[in-house]
Amino acid sequence: RKEVEQDPGPFNVPEGATVAFNCTYSNSASQSFFWYRQDCRKEPKLLMSVYSSGNEDGRFTAQLNRASQYISLLIRDSKLSDSATYLCVVKGAGATNKLIFGTGTLLAVQP
Amino acid sequence: DGGITQSPKYLFRKEGQNVTLSCEQNLNHDAMYWYRQDPGQGLRLIYYSQIVNDFQKGDIAEGYSVSREKKESFPLTVTSAQKNPTAFYLCASNPTDWDNEQFFGPGTRLTVL
Image (cartoon, rainbow over all chains, first blue to last red):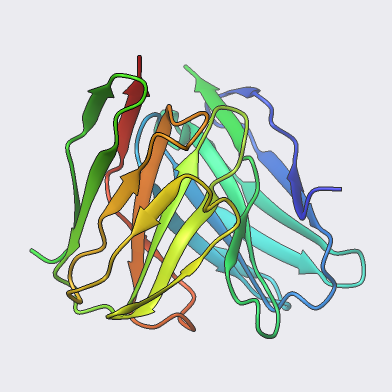
């Protein structure tokens, strides 16, 4: 089983749609969780951290369910500029504090 | 402007040749990392360095070597022992290894012919 698993997509949605991405992780001791965004042939950039209480940044909402080892990202009112690959990232626990990256979910917002 | 630079953006080499990828940062970060990214796979950690003059192997270090003689520089050598070197190579840094966010360079796309 992969340490971080995501649906690879692609998700093709019209502008203005709401889209949700899910991610599961295998290590129950993981401490920190993130969503990164990666544009085609570019480097990943941090989109937002994910907190246990859930957090929102404009049109983006991230949630964490520790019991189910599940992370989600919701994008409301999708824009063309949201088209990218969204990477679920988990930070290891204890001595292993390295970032572990999912394979990413490709989002294509259509006009 | 502070940031991470990687050069070159595209690199072509013949099979059997060693090649060194450059990574420089002027963010005064202690920790630096090298990842490779292949289609359909997540980023995989090759090597990392928590502080100057020290580095550790990541998950896929075989066929690679690094040095960290200066805080701002963390070059990666892809040796001829690396069986499948064609990939997108990303360098990253953060203030310390315990900080959460990693800042990435623009990447080098290596193609071995």
